[in-house]
Structures are given as C-alpha cells and as structure tokens.
Length: 116
Length: 110
Image 1 (tube, each protein chain N blue to C red):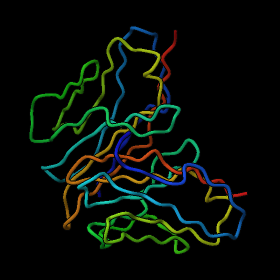
Image 2 (image 1 turned 180 degrees about the vertical axis):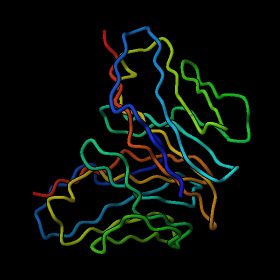
Image 3 (image 1 turned 45 degrees about the vertical axis):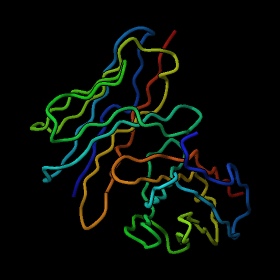
Image 4 (image 1 turned 45 degrees about the horizontal axis):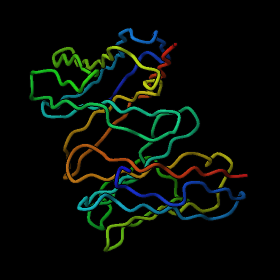
C-alpha cells in the first residue's frame, strides 16, 4: 500500500527567506502524481503545485518549486522569498490510478509559520 | 471561488442527531470525494462517487452514508452523532487527476 510521510510537524522561517518542506512516499507504481496543498487559517485547501512522475523536470509555480527525486521517492517543496501569507498547513499528496479510480493519499501535514 | 460549493458552512447540533452535508462539484467534474479533518489532523478519506456510483470507500463509519444524485451533487449523511464527529468535512471534485476542494462544512456536535 502507498504511504506518504511528512516528517516535519512544524517549521518556521523568516520573511523573505527560503524554506524546504520534506515529503517521502512509498509505492511500487511507476505512474503516479504528486501534489502539495496549502491550508491557511481559513481552512480552505488550495493546490500549490503538482508533479507528474513521468516528467523528470521539477515543477515550478512562481515562488514554489519542488525537488522530485523519483528513485529516492522524495518530493520536497521549496518556498522562496517567504511571505506572511504563506503561513499555513502544507499537505503532500500522492495519487495514482488503480482499480478504475484515482486514489489519493495525504500526508499528515507540516505547519509552516512565516515570521515577520 | 473554487467552483466546488459546500453547504452549510457551519453546523452545530446535539449528540444523537442526524445531519446532511451537501456538495455541488465543479461544472463538468464527475467524481466527488468526501474527507473528514478533525482538529489539527490530516485528511481522512471517507468515500468517493463517480457519476452517481460509489467508487471507493475509506474510513467511513457505518453511521455515515453518502450518495451522488443525477445532477452530480452529493450528500453526506451523518447520524447518531457523537462528540468525536466534530470536524471539518471537505468535499472535492475532479475530472481526472488533481482535486478541487470546497471550503468545507464545520460540524460541531455539542
């Protein structure tokens, strides 16, 4: 069975600095997708970035980028130039297609606080 | 606005009662997923529907049930409510891969 592990329950970073959130996963599948979701204090779940496993190039979205290491089954999120609005819970998620449906597994989350 | 609509936003009810949470998926999305998030916890998958049919089941209690209607909206029914059922209930929809989440329904059982 697939698992997703986020080993950092809480992190903090100074405004304008860079922070990296870790995520590892376990799967025997070769085709899958990985996501980072952000959940600010409003509790809304917001898609930050996604990566297709068959793509070697790391995904980037403005200040957000990932370091996808398929062999190591690692999918870390780097936030550059951190802003106060980045304060949120961040969830890593794994998705694959099996038994006729897409199956998602979420990690337990990392609480990020950006300090002024 | 994500396009996924959940109602009501807040619900306060007493133990033993029954409530219904509603979700309207994003236009064109056939899949609806329900998740439970207890305070400061991760998301627990409850159940998925695809075009009206149950497709996958997670850690959903027998007191909970769901359905998806022909217009693709979905309802999650929670009965014999207990204090521990207090949580944020999310609905998400997708056409393929990648969820779009609703803003959630916060259920408080007193």
